[in-house]
Length: 475
Image (cartoon, rainbow, N blue to C red; front, side, top):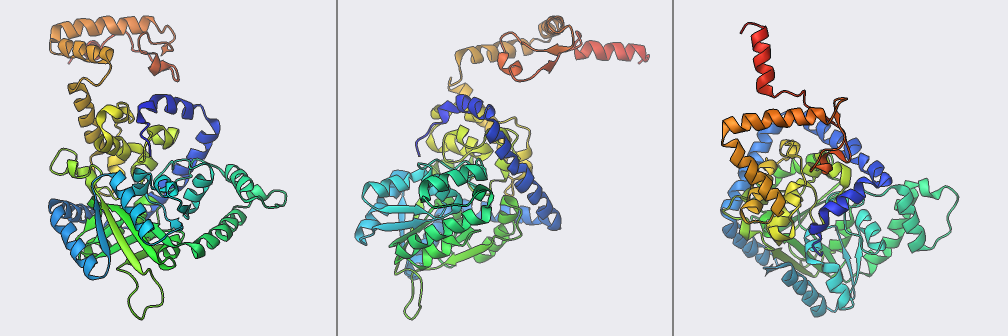
């Protein structure tokens, strides 16, 4: 996927003005936020489980190379072929080579954010392989000219049923009764009818991997639609692609993390489908692929090991941070301009593709801390966003005027006497600009008032107000 994070401000403004999108995004709070809260209340030992999951993920990352090698050895012993890719482009090239080697003409695919990093569909279609997205949300986006996903768990959360119905009408060319656009079950049934033919005709199935388990050489997949089973059981070739940070040492580790993943993502106790895929079809077995590949992608992940941002590698891609983020709730995922939106994307995207290409993302948050509160892996997202802002400032990547203002404020803040004088003048000026107590146009900072009125200060600083109150009370 092409990086377009440099257009964040313009895109965010467009999304804020999109009334239909604003209505559709209310589904986040109505479904995911309330469902997660209820699911966590039912988990009496949530904090203990959370702490244990963080400990296990940290232990795996502390010896990442060793556990990856252990996974490769066990997966190979079980008949899988493990391949390594340093860049997303290398990973795409590996999948293309596998398709060529096995004469693949048609492929089915489950939702995979790593494959979005790789622009995998375009790479396969360039060599004549027909690719079909089988997650319902991703399929809807595919027939809409490969529109990027807006959310990592619910990729089509930004659309309503009428928009989906129009896409189906355009793509499937079927006769429909009046009011069909309100029949959600009917649309799902129609998609199943179309996709079932693709499943049966596929030569290769492509999936992501929520985790890989070193102990058994397995790939763990979590879905709600069951499409991962049809992508892995029916085709003669299966390719699983995941990031190197997703390795877990044991099945016990997997069980611990799985107590948190579905609850954090959708509020479910467990997802509808949970698969552990271990090797190709063995002699005597009646289903499963003849050839099983696992591609492990670096894609900038090793650059976080041992540094200030290593905590991000604990991320299990549940989407809880974006579901609860007040910024994401208003603008959706497309504004962020790459694969990963929301608070986690505002840290991951600069880390993977470069801070200079993502100038606005570290500032695409209020730093309210809600993302850290709900993160099952206790990732300190607000602190990491602050560190990215510091790096931008240190490297001179912020606009010159902004840097000059911050430098001036810093100079003034280190001189208390001058700061007190300047503060008194500032609050009096702001009070004079708002005779009715509301600031509607703030000189030099129109961005703060273009969409809101701000309460004006009382004309006196906090110190002055505090001193007056203390004197009144005789303190």
